[in-house]
Length: 453
Ligand code: UD1
Ligand code: MG
Image 1 (tube, helix red, strand yellow):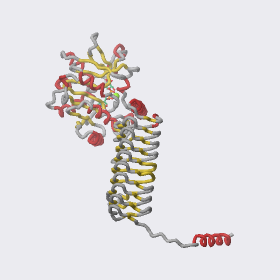
Image 2: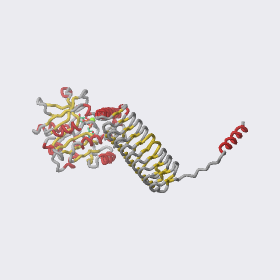
Image 3: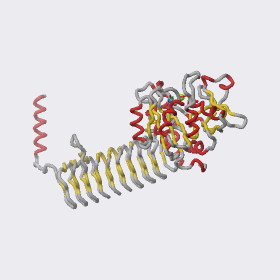
């Protein structure tokens, strides 16, 4: 990054007010997900990579839902409302009052264009022309705005497709929509935009031409067309998802992760997997998953909002839900669900178990069929289990309840009282044995059946 655009001098405006009518959806377009994260989250993450002083999302259609989602994705981002969608220039104008007093660089992104890379943005941000536009050579330039460049390669102006003549339409260098400009320049020219054009809209794309005419320098930075892919329909959303997954799978392999059947593993935008981790077939990562190096996730497991430490094994057919924290060498086997629970080092939960709102101390073994009964119909309660303990198969732990260190519970117990350290907790009917009774019952039943014919 050049000296004049150091940390703190960048503000990002993300345009997200459009309706996205071709999605045919009640959900605002930018809230449709790619990689398990709303598209606007991709723009926010890319923006965040620039370490900006401010981030502003311009919301309009579905503003309430967009505001709520943005608040979760990045609580520091602000919202500017654009009640009527009068064009991209008008959208940026709605955000500028929130940047009063800011004199750095402003970068404009679209909320429906999820693949602009951090490297491309960094390159754009560090360019020192007064206005810089991100362009690309389009295989099919279609209806994109065209970038008219001078002999010296500088940008003269942008012409929207609808307003372009045949010669201009023949240009293949197109506008991605991403633009960087000094805040002062933007303020000056945004106010002067008119809407006397084929769409009757205030075009952000008029800014470079206006700035240049006033003696400022305008430039183009280019990127690969794949980065500029915008989503306007369900088909494009599906294509974006496929592109995202393909690229994340390659990246994981590149990073030293084994994916036994790569095309069946599903990533989220923020999935982190350390090297030498092994991921089996049909594993789905929802948002917020970290798998440390050397951990193994076997086939058909579904993970979300969880952390799996080195040496741990998960699955096959395991479900880790938000707040599942697995320490080193923990083993979670098949048909086990874990939510909001910390499993310390070496804990084993082999089969058919639900652990919710619990803490399990190191090296404790949880028998098959164990359930933490954490919900009483109204509230959630915690289960605390010490270290080196042994929970017998089919134990119901009725929370709130605690089991001490080195303790045991008998199989089939319903544990409603705390079990102290070193104790055995038994909560089941005492066994009775009736010699010969099985044989007599069977005999009686067979006789009954014979009588009925
Ligand atoms: C825009 C560019 C065009 C570029 C293309 C790239 C303009 C005038 N044209 O055209 O040069 O090649 O993107 O995809 O900028 N939006 C708002 N408020 C509005 C209008 C739009 O927030 O009033 C948002 C939309 O939600 C969308 C983005 O801005 O995310 C772009 O708007 P869109 O209408 O898709 O612009 P294009 O006509 O595609
Ligand atoms: Mg568009």
